[in-house]
Length: 136
Image 1 (cartoon, rainbow, N blue to C red):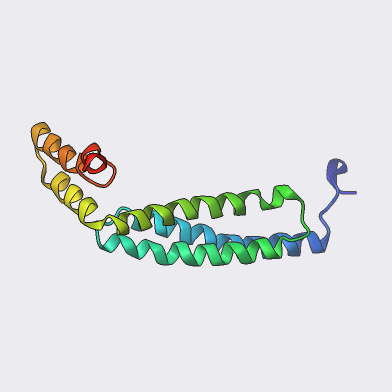
Image 2: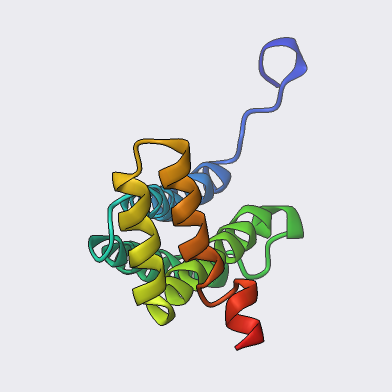
């Protein structure tokens, strides 16, 4: 027994924790890199897909490594998969409606006044999810 009754961790528990950390850290860094890339202007923003796809592959491998572990060990990898999937879905929607998204973003980047921003909102409303698109 250790100091104050604490039981020292088993060497295999330490090895497991190290291996899990070694597999988790690159995923975290890739997701962070992808999120940062999402702030790039179009079309450079689509570079974010690469770290997200690699993060998904590494997360699936991490979940395979964690097979047989308790459910709480797998919570964060599953959350990472869901979050990364949502971000990839967002990129896919921006790619699918690229002309509308680009026009809106270019308008907003040049809008200096509230009336100019209101005109940009009209562009957004005429886009794929605006009312004008549904009515036409």
